[in-house]
Image 1 (cartoon, rainbow over the protein chains, first blue to last red):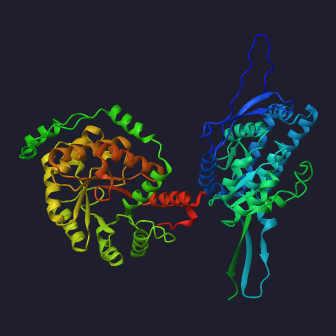
Image 2: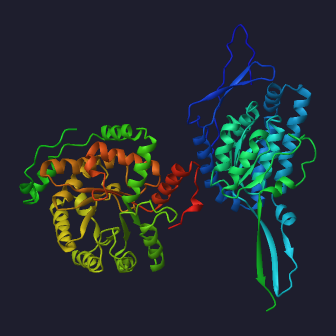
Image 3: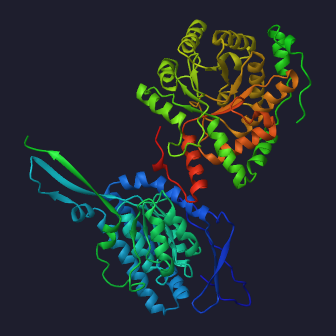
Length: 294
Length: 316
């Protein structure tokens, strides 16, 4: 976070990197952009991801998908809970990041960070309950036992909310990975620092590299490449530019991506009860017919 | 590197002593220099038109390979279909150079390929260890050729080579070349087991002197397989051999090449070290199966403008 300039010490002008496949590469394009604080002062330099970085992130997410989706729900829950633990340990840092980026009071930032941690815990608890809520047994007329089993969709691209840089981010990313998907996230364009801090948490947690990949950069530049990428199975357009979203949906149609459209009334308040709709947004239902009593 | 002085090639293989003297007299390979040369050429940027050409060229140079104990006629059939029409959605996509299988599956392969341009390569001579009696190896080759193989991939006896029995290695290659008849002979050096680049250069020359039509890096069963410095040394060997004798022999890189990007980088090595004449399937090959799908994906990406995915190509 920004250091105050004092007579004795020059500030460290940080240049952050991307988070792809569990590593922190610079952007392949070597570009970066200036992140300003809510008051307009210099905050840091963030890497400006290119389409090649987005592609590399998709490759990393695809590679991680097999193991993550096949891990037991219980194990996924443990891993996600561990991340919440680590968020709690770095609470002060996240509060600073939210204050600097969103220009809110320390008090509001504190409650936002607490909410984000609680939300992560909440989704961690959901991993082994998804099958019960979204799956089930189906009564059929015949000598069969028939049941529906939810399975993760695959690689999900997420355009994170632009305003709520931490709570919004957690609210869209956690449900995607809790249900066994892997993801490529485009962080808030003007407020990427909480996402970068989150990447540092993820890198040192038990989460396998590639399950969550975080890109910082220009959303309108990156989103079309993710939407048209044939190896991305679903896209969450929550933080997409409304002027661009029709185009993004059209691009997504090429490989019949599952699309979660941007909320109609603009970015919602993330403070309320999240419900389970996001958990179900990126699931496929496999139905099994099992002969019985023949 | 300058070309070697024309060696007295006929004398070199007269007996054990002269062969040893000739191979020992080859200039040593500067390991750091070879790695530096390869690394330098590997960073070259390839522009769009050149990339499109390179992707198609690389596809036409692939020996589409399946060398598993679990190979079945069904798998061979689908591999042949893929070799003939790598991208069924696009007739402009060239076929691969050859299908590479075990000798007992050559007949199956011939049935599906017919007499077309796609060749059949077969790994004979107790692949991949090369540990069998000479009569067994010759019988292996004979059966593969009789079943219709166009190309024979043999492995050298690394035990004999590494313990310095060069003439034995030489004579074995000569005998198998004879047994191959009209079929092209590719000699696998298994560079991962040769331990030094000096040995790679010596083995390359040994194979070329014995009449190998191709020298090939690896069986694909030993790591490391094809590496950039090894490719540099082998390409220099065929270039120097051509400068000495006027005969053009080929190089096949096998094992570990999976990305289109790497394939294109190797094509740069071929052009810059061996020369433009080698940029053809007659003189340069990739032994790979996984590489083809990545090349097809990149090709589709170049054509459609959006990134493609592995779901849209057959798993071979």
